[in-house]
Length: 124
Image 1 (tube, rainbow, N blue to C red):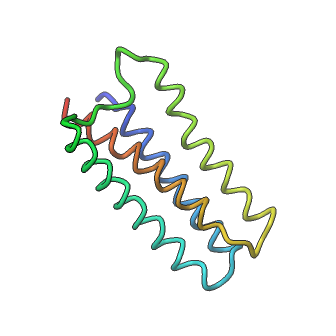
Image 2: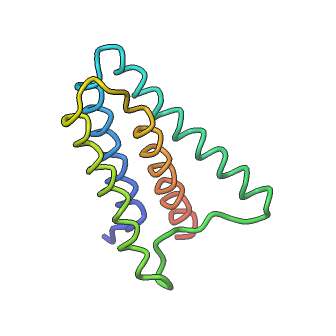
């Protein structure tokens, strides 16, 4: 069984986003939990829909980011979950702050990796 690298990056980035939301909810205050969870889901949905709309308007089809023609892309795609994991440390260093922007950025990166995984699945 071959593991699809685009799907693997999407899964790891989604797990890193989940960890970020959990840590930000724990250290961000009691009212922040629902806001961070909702922000993550809404941003992923909006980013996927907007990307799909823009690709259709330009007459393009989504392509997987990690392809055989560009082997270096796998290294660059590994940066996405690492950065999201690194930002999950910030709420512990500065509790009681607002981390909504961090969640939005991580959710958009997760949407990019999910779109890449969907495109890889379509082309396989």
